[in-house]
Length: 580
Image (cartoon, rainbow, N blue to C red; front, side):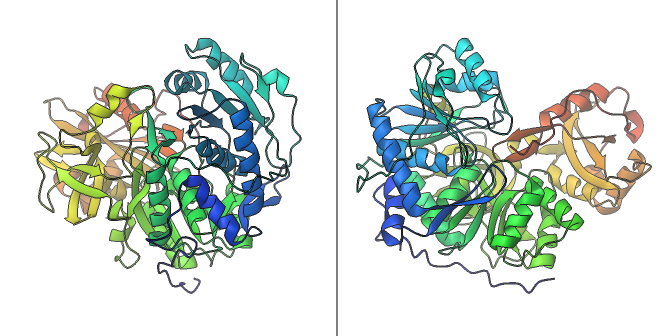
C-alpha cells in the first residue's frame, strides 16, 4: 500500500472566490491565458496513442478563430450548435466559441445511432453540427445522413473536425443539405472574444431516457460558471493537477469534470475512447490526481491493474457514482493500494454532475455512498412527501428536491416539460429517494421507482445487492421488484458469476447467503444466475437496465417458484460497454 497523501481542499488560485468570478464562460479560458499562456490545458491523444499537449494559448487561438468562423456562418444569439465529437480539445474550443456567439451547444454521444440523432435534430434544431471525421471506425456520417432524412428539422450545416494529429478531409462528402466546411486552426490574432451574456443558454445534455427518448436539459452560463468554480474548490483540485477526463464531454459528468479542472487551472487528461490499460499508463506516467466516474469505469481499471500493476500513488481523489453496486469494494481497493480518498457524488443532467459529495473528512464507508453536501450555498435541497410535496424533517425518506443555479433552465424543443419538472413553489422534482441529514447535506437512497415495499417495509434494493455481491462466487448483482402471486411486491435477484468459477453459484445457496446477513423479509424470493447483465452505455457510464430485469423477472415468475431461480441465459440482447 502506498502512503496516503493528504486530501484537503486547495485554494482555487486561478479564480479566487468570491471577487474574481469570470465574466462569462469564454472569459474563464481568457483569464487562464492571461495568467500563463504556455501552461498545458489539455493532453490530447494522437492517432498512435501518443500524448499531444495543447497549451492554454493554443486553445484560446483555436477558440478565437472558430468564433469568427461561426460569425461568418451566421451562428448567433439563441442558436443551437450540435457537437458530435469525442474527448478532443476541439470539443472545448467549440464550447467556448459557441458561447462567445451567444449560442448554445448540445453534445451528441458518439454511441448514438440514427433514431437518437434524429431526435436531437428534431428537438434542438441545430443550425450547425460539428462531426468527428473517421473516429474509432464509426460511420458517423452515415448515421447523420439517415437521421437528417428521417427528421423534420432543417438539415444543419456541417463542420468536419479531423481530430488531434489527423489531416483535414474533403468536406464536400459531409454536405447533408446546408453545406459543409473544415474549421481552421489559424493564428487567431484577435486579442479577445466578444462579451456574451452569461444568462443565455450555454449547454444542454441528454437525460437518461428511461421513459422513452431523452429530454435535452439546458443550462445557462451563470450556472456553469458557478458550478465549475465551486467544484474545483470543494474537490480540492490544484493548479497544474492532471485530472482524468475519460467520460465523454457530451455527458454531464465528463463536462463538469473538465470545467472544474479548467476553473482550477489544472490539466485535462483526455481519453476519446476508453481503454483501461491506456488510461492506467497515463495515470501512472502523468501522476493523475483526480478521477470522476462510475464504479463500472474503475472496475475495468482494477482488472487491468491486477493484470499489470502500475504506480498510482498520485491518485488523491475519486468521485464515484454507483452504477454497478461495486463502489464500496473498489473504494477500499483504491484506498488500500494507493491511499486514494473516495467520495460518493450526486448529480444528473438536470442538476449538473458533482452537485454534491461527502466532505473529505466524512468517515468511511458512509463517504462512499451517493449524496453529501451541496458544493455551494446557492444550491438548496429539501426532502418532500412525494404526494403533495410537503417538506419532511431530517431523517425521513422522501423525494429529493432542488433549487438553485445548477437546476435545469429548460428543455430544448419541449417547453411543457419544464412545467412538469417543478413543484408549484419552484422546487425541481429529482425523482430520487433520499433523506435530509443537515442543512445542505443529504443521503441518496435510490430512484423512487426502484425502492421496494417488502412486507410493509420500504427497502433500498442496494442493501440486498451488496449482500449478494459479497458472495465469493458473485461478480455483480442487481435486485428488482415484481408483483408476486398475492399481489404484493417480491424481490428478485440477478447475479453474474465470477469468471472462472465453476460450477456457477446455486440460486438456493445465494438465498441462504442472503438470509445469513439480512432480515428475513429482505431475502430475495428468487435468484437468477445469468451470463451478463443487460446494460445501457450512456455518456456517464454503463448502467444496468433494471426495467429489462423486471421484464425478465415477470416472464420467469411462473417457473421460478419455490425460491430457486434458473441459471440459463436470459433471453434478450445485452449491450457490452464499448468505452466510446
